[in-house]
Length: 407
Image (cartoon, rainbow, N blue to C red; front, top):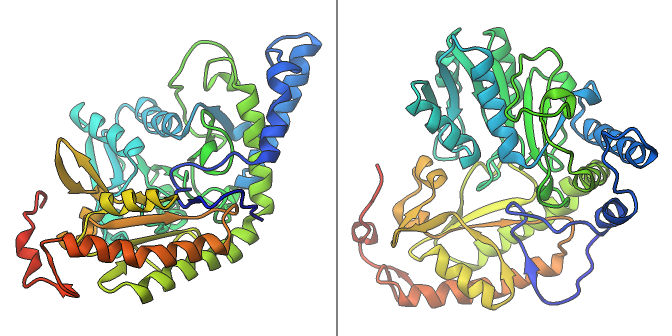
């Protein structure tokens, strides 16, 4: 499905995706020709209103929602996450506990940390070395004091899938609201919300080939809800503000295309991912896959290259026209692995060198082969400069050279 225009290779699709040409074509008329306010009663507004209704139905179809009225358009996934969590807390002021995980995206994690400072008790579910949740810990945390459970459908760094449908059923039995940040999952794995106990779900347009600046919060009919933004009557009073009509219409088209492409995503995109993983593991010593290889997104692989820094790998990849991302971040001049790598207890010697490759339907097998071709030399070059590597093997006791900055 891809058409290569140059030698650049983009494998950072979990960060953002190219807007599909069909999506651009769908949205352009709503900037210059059909520019009316959908709330207006004249025909200019009516045309846009009908287009928004169609987009809402397209999102509903991809999510398998029961009603199009359960779809609330937002500006992004972060807004949707904040709205879901804060709404549950405001709607149930007597409940002062929240359940989430230690590997959530900051869009959820930072809201929970803020509420913790406001007096809420947050149950932080831990993960094992493969990034899998401890379900007994979850069951033990459920009670009538919990306002909401918020657990991501798929981890953005490793692609590991969480059992959110099972968790939602357990939450419903306990009388607790359940929200999932499905930003990375929507369009990559089949979702049929009407057959689940999930109360709220967040998604972001720019992760599935729609433009930035548009997202969705699914709110199951009957869910107690308090809006984050108040003002106009838009979105049935659940999200005030004039609708981003062009963005919403683009998202609708992107959802339609994602639904049509699910089989391709889980066959050819997955095959490219597997070839990339197999090729790198075979060609480069002292590297391994992080997360749960048996239960993950079809487009994502995170590989830890031991004894070198991820940022240096990315810099040299970038010189070759290859884009990926690192599982570590450089803050205040001191390198520290990402919270996801820390939570999985990845060794210090590997956590710093974790690289996420995330593909899309616009990649081709030639992209994969190019990465397999250039990565061994990059890793070898950096290891020759590393004090933790000697010749063609790790230096004696390299772990002792690392000074852990986390527990």
